[in-house]
Length: 400
Image (cartoon, rainbow, N blue to C red; front, side, top):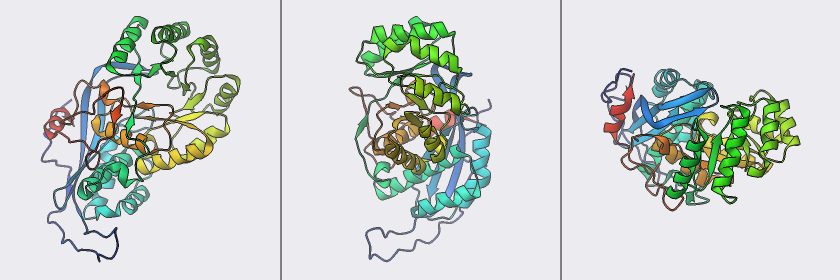
């Protein structure tokens, strides 16, 4: 791919002169001077993974993601990110860029960032769907607002329910012995939960791998499996029947998202909780899946269209008694992973764990990637997302 310099951006949208700032009447705690948006950049990056990760239907070797950089009139910056996900959201990298550059960015120039909820609503009316692009824009606006106000993102969306999360590690090697070696190595590094990618190999090999991993990890380590819609109903039933001794926490998206009857049949007939991921794109999807007996869902910002929608979905899950896995897409940088941590710390519960995917990158684009310490990732304490983007790294991995 041809690499291009970061600045200047020929597709950036810029307000030539900062607008005059007018102070609101100081008669209420929420009053604050207007802060206008002067520039919006849509940036494509391709960041290599430390090693390819195989999933049903695709092997991911690098992260091809959209970055959104929003600059206010006073120079304050906000960053957002969304992974391309053609088989999950329909978002290609080119489509994400076009959505922001041609439709969303022009509508933001000159707008007051403190009107974020109204801005996001207007943008959704301007461009239907394109949930990844909407998510990246809202993330950048929240980051910008947090930095301008000196508040963490989580405090802008209702406050923290917890201050750390315990991320799970995804396993998806071609050989069983490599999965076992990786799981044991990651246990020593502090990962205490694992999700095995299944639906990519012969069924008997999937069963043997699951049982072998449980034996090596011991009974106390949370272990789940994710088929990424790679099983038939018969294969899913056989897999669950033969892996009962593995005591899986849940099996995620075993069947095609459109096969709601099959998912309902599987959920009623097996003891292992069944979760949905690729089948969840809206609140209506969550309600539809719950009626068919599914036990939980995976919440991703790019699927639901941003932080506000994901929090609304989490509250719906609590009302419906559904478990929640908060997840970033394979693979996102510490920008989107930080947003996932803020989301996981804000939701009522994340009892099915948290998947943070910046750990799978060979390099990151922030000055200090989110660390794992004593088995947990701590909620960033700085304003906004709480991370500092390295624009030299962004330039290094930028593509057109």
